[in-house]
Length: 152
Image 1: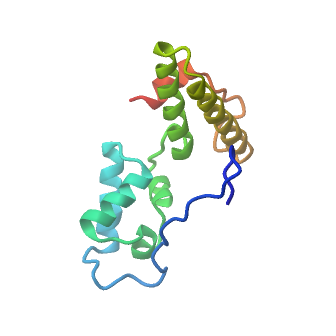
Image 2 (image 1 turned 30 degrees about the vertical axis):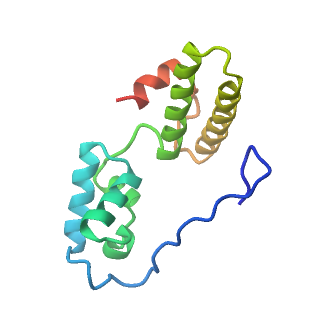
């Protein structure tokens, strides 16, 4: 897939494990994996970090292969919800860090352009999530107000 703000193609990434049945080396049952996901979510970890922790510490290749449910579905079952979707949260954090940098470095034109690009991605994602009804229809991106939501 092409990059949004350059004429380059993306980097190649690693391939995900095959979606077969539960691998033989996974010693945890599906209930134990689900409880671990809930425990990590209550500690404040994001969905991607939960997957990485389960992969690295317990050898779970994909939560969906072991439990039959994605991490997002487990979150919904246990009424755990983040204030914003994870990809939007990461972009907002990046924009807030760029704004903080630009407060002390006013003449950094490259960072200013990077902030514009990041915020255009944020606006596109907000438009998408409003159409999918993940965010409210009256949701607005205001960097000062959203700082309290994201930076906890």
